[in-house]
Image 1 (cartoon, rainbow, N blue to C red):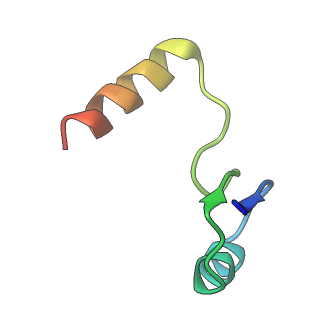
Image 2 (cartoon, one colour):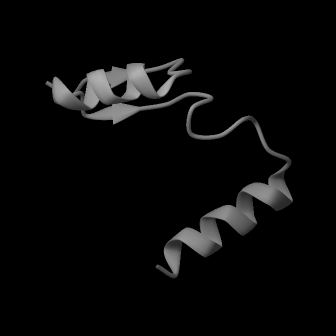
Image 3 (cartoon, rainbow, N blue to C red):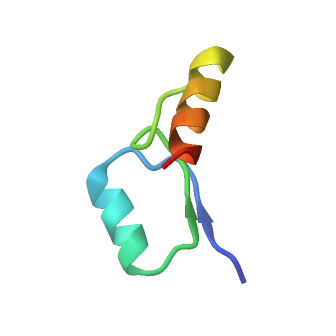
Length: 49
């Protein structure tokens, strides 16, 4: 079973969920909502690493 945690807002929450092997995390701790152009720029930068 794949587990997804949504609404992660703090590093403490992120670290805890990673420690208990949560498969996927989503929330403001990673990024606030972005305009599409900023999102595309972020995805392009991350795909080139």
